[in-house]
Length: 160
Image (tube, rainbow, N blue to C red; front, side):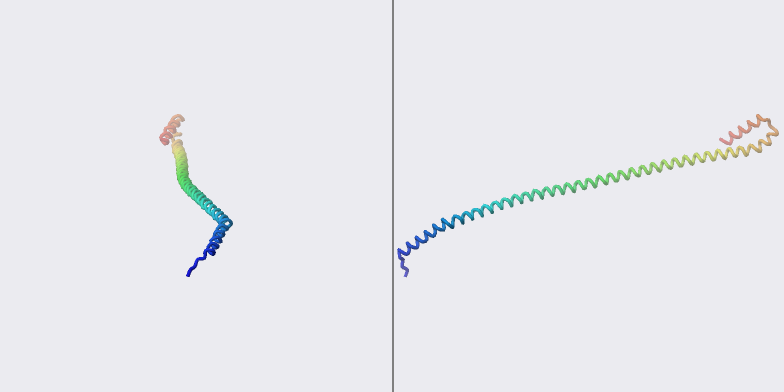
């Protein structure tokens, strides 16, 4: 069966304690220091990652705001350009109508002037043509003053 020998047990206990002491003194301390450094490195990395994530979120939010602002500004520019285009088109149309009306008025005035000149010339010509035969006939029968009065009266009738 099992027999316990006190000497062997003491020897094994002393060897175990020496081993624990040596491991604790030479291996455990450096191992714990390495583990602590690793723990701190991981904590630092996690903190830096959180900071970078927050910075990235802030940057993303800023970019979204810039994009929204740019879109809004683009819409405003397009709307202003449309309004300006419509105003310019209305101005051009108004100027074209005004110019057209001026040209039409000038043309009507010129036509009326030419018409009045033609009517005057025709009346003068008719008056002369009518007076010439009558003056020949009357020359023989009327004296000079009567002749002039007759011509003036006839010209007044023709002009009115």
